[in-house]
Picture (tube, rainbow, N blue to C red):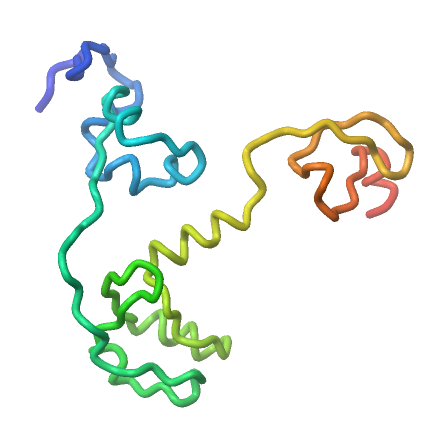
Length: 165
């Protein structure tokens, strides 16, 4: 049990009721969602007292089965198979609930590991930036997360409400 107030290795003091210090996290910064939104270098993270995990340099196993292209051709033996990510080379497995979901929605077996799939989803999101634009309907200056070089039509709140309702 730690004493309250708690002092971390950088001398920062944490009082009762505050967020836990990053050094107590079981996850390294570069394994967290925070890294996806606010990427920093290893040196910057360590300087801030954050945990960092270097890439695992071990040799991963080859896939133990070739995955059929269509989900209808996938048998339950895939649950015991070792798959290999085509992006990072790490091994992963498919669990029963995931296989049920993929079959239900007629989706193929993923060829990327869960972390690579998550990082790909994050790349599709708008960056955490605010841009100054004009409403395409009335010309009012507005702030939005859509850059001016993007194809989306951007309305001010009033014009949006008129358009939708």
